[in-house]
Length: 526
Image 1 (tube, rainbow, N blue to C red):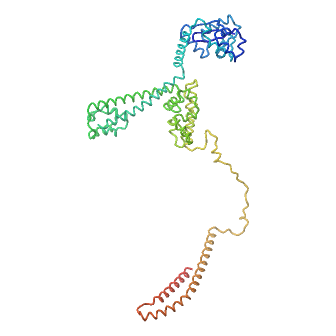
Image 2: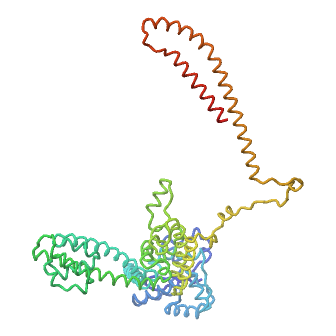
């Protein structure tokens, strides 16, 4: 049996001396404890040294990709000419398949071979003669640096690093521009405060300040290329009656320098945005169509790379960027957030507040598909993104119109709304058709009922009147006794005071008259 072993210095081919000891896989490591024991198991047959680092890098990249390099092919052809009947132990099964197809050489890859490779690697300095350890270490270090540099340079996963850096720089420029513009408005506002209220656009404000300088120059300056005619007239009239303080030329020069910086940064920001848009359309066209350039770039930057973003499920894509809110909700046992960075997509912004959660969930599902298509697919067209965006738009339209039909879902709500109710079709007998009497209209029935009610109320009133009369009769007997006593008292009092009027007799007469009047009124009403 032959063993193919790859090192940083070159290819080594060993011949196994005792194949019986290889059967004991668990105790094979004991045979490689010392160089002497290792030389009893394997023996170096051929060693092909690399001429320089470039050849070593080409051979190692071919091994990583599972391909057969030219130098390895020459070595194996020599072995086939001499020992064609021998089996070749290979560390990589994919490389073994390639060797078997091209050179018709039987290859072995098993746990036994793995343990054998580990033992050879531990005693490589003693097995390969004529190669100092210092030189071997230098070759390993040089090959490692070259291989890592090659991977960083040509790896397709690292192309989206430009997008991550560009979107980060764009956010930093927005923050700096905001700070600079606020400082410029506040600084120049001491000299010409009315200008800030007239011109609301920040870039136009800085351009106007940079062109005018001192407010005394507004009347002679031509601002037609910056401002419309109406606003230009307002600025000139406001400059004549301005309440700002006077400033020196040195202060004006510093303000103009700040305005120049704002103008330059804003122009660079527009260039950077165009660059980011072109890179996004080249690397992730379907993602760009679904959520836009800025949101797609922020998703890639948050995940680290497009390939890492493709590994996330749709539920993670939906709340990507809202990790603090998610863990806070889980800790306090409240509702989890419905959206993260995807909230700034145009489709979510178009929907109503009650539908934002549904649209963000569907948009995240379709976005996850487009991300995987961009990261792992070979086609670079944006047709898939356009189709998925159309589906989300139709779903949004149905939700806004409160449509009954559903594109996806189990339809449980519809089942509850349209619940089946059994209705019997058995007809009951109608006895109204049996009578021969003429039918009485409803109005006549209502009039008869009202007449019956009026008769009952009249009878009730008569009974009340009779009860009142009986009570009056009962009350009249004790009144007569009192009259006699009062008459005696009046006779005695008349002698003392003849001028007093008989109050008791008149009061009794008035009460009797009132009672009679009440009885007459009640009888008239009846």
